[in-house]
Image 1 (cartoon, protein in one colour):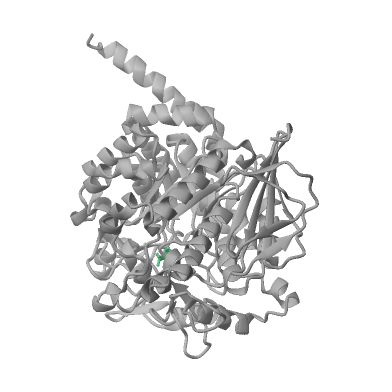
Image 2: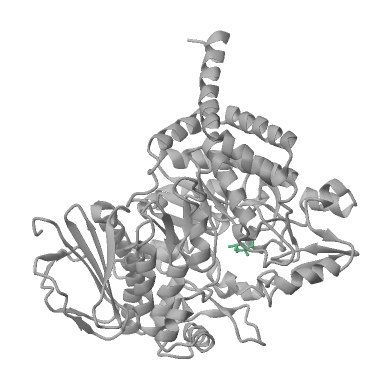
Length: 624
Ligand code: GLC
């Protein structure tokens, strides 16, 4: 039956009421934050008007999902979420290709896919997609906005969420605004930090550290006779968020993408977005005001959307991005320190720091959701707790050097095959690149044709995943890790990539290897299958819910980490041997534990673990 005009406007006004109610609850705070920062009520009014417009344009299907998620605000705080991050072209050619591969994604147990940057960029100069030329256009070779909407719709039908990057700190120098700025249009020049002389740039440089000291030195770039602030690469122009026009327009871009069905926005390089002379231009209070405003705007227009903050810094800097329980900022944050600490533990076989790190993370409010991962598209930086390590007799500089040497395979009984990234010849500082499998020794074992070493490397690879899965939050796999994919050296022959070792672990997904899964002896089969088992264990046991108590246990054996999770009478222990040698521990526990991986009853009074193995032990209140 066709709707009458009255029916339609009744429906619409009914919907608008939802928007207005959400607005009513939040507008006092939003207005005071906005006008406090910008003293511009005209621009505030424009923002509100646009928010209403994006709300009205939002698809009914997305609005229903918003309503559902609003009614269950903990929808993403469960134990059955599993992410996978991937480059669209590497994984499946283009967005349509990804749609065709959704069955594989489901088979891998994945229900969140993070599509690495897919927006319009300049070929060659784009920092892996993080120098966006047009926030409303898909990279031509990957498809168009209609393909994106089709993909998100297809994903939602299968209960898969889509995460996308929102690189809001900068635009490409080929973005329309940057071009107009260079043509001398002051309206656009004011959206960046552009100076005629080096006076202010020099003052910035006195206090602002460099992000890429080797591959992209300097904070400023000479463009014609001007100096432009480019914190990252010379072609990534920092946006000036002191200009309310910048904030408003970027919010509109955000809402535009949210309306294409994006569920999670990764706020790229978020700590850097506010600049102030005389500071290090990181984590300034205004950054938190902006993130809080983004959260409020999201809650009003598209409350089903999550904000994931990319804060690659030490824990004290990361946690404030959750905001407070009353005034939350990001919904989810990357657990970067745990990731780096896991790799430190691999190189040292000493779990003391990791245990401490687990204790820090698990002592935080249970509402805080972390995204846990072993590898991502970036390098591993050694942001560890060096004060703690000093007590373990590991001095910062020497230790960093050791870790780098370990992962390039030249020190410390290492089978790793990583490469250095941004190695500073003066300070000796560097970071590490490489896939999980290559860092665990799978690449070397395969080259050497050494079966025993291969079995050991696979065990280590799986154990690290098992260890990551012990944490509450959202585990995120790096595409290819589920089949143990090794480094890709083809980047060295590509002039656009060869200077950036991060491409070592950004290779094409190897469907030819994936097909080897039919052979049960293949490494691909073994890794894929065992990871699936672990993910199922996690999803099927309540003790993996975020409300569980999580405690580490002292084993008096440096190489063995024990993490306990307790909920509703269920007790789960993850026991991980980070050494290649057999280790024995004597837990202070009665008998009656089942190893959830093998299904065997395990006598726990004396527990012996072969090198690089683990148990996931479980006992419920009935002793089962
Ligand atoms: C983020 C990305 C990284 C990129 C940087 C600049 O840190 O993860 O790959 O280089 O932002 O956009």
